[in-house]
Image (tube, rainbow, N blue to C red; front, side, top):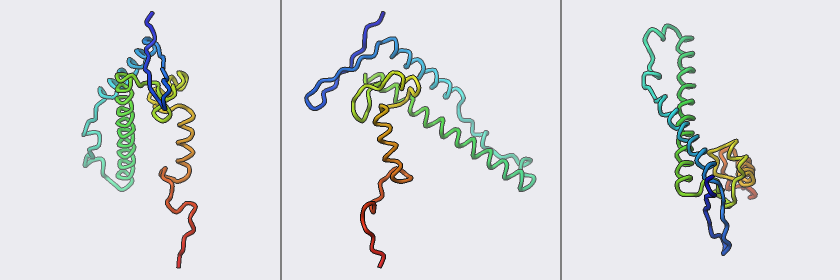
Length: 152
């Protein structure tokens, strides 16, 4: 049976070591490689977004085709983002930081990794991030928050 894979970090003079056995790490690596290969094998075909003259017979057809094309483009964008997350996860596996929270350096629970394998934050840090996002719709704290504005 493979032994534990240890990645140690120093934080404020304290040394913390993460332990994830090699079998579990290899399972995640295999999962990421399968997902990446599946996404890449689907490929992006330019003709998926090409409009044929016959498809544009009236305004209703055009509207329907535009909506369908927009949905396909959104799906492709989501797939591209997921592919980026997969590649980042594979890099973290190679560097030995997979399973370690990027924010607090604590170990991410295995249950969380199984539910969301590409995550890079532990539950507590993700909850904090989501609370901060609620402050403003695009995730940035408005500069005027807490200040009185003079309108005259």
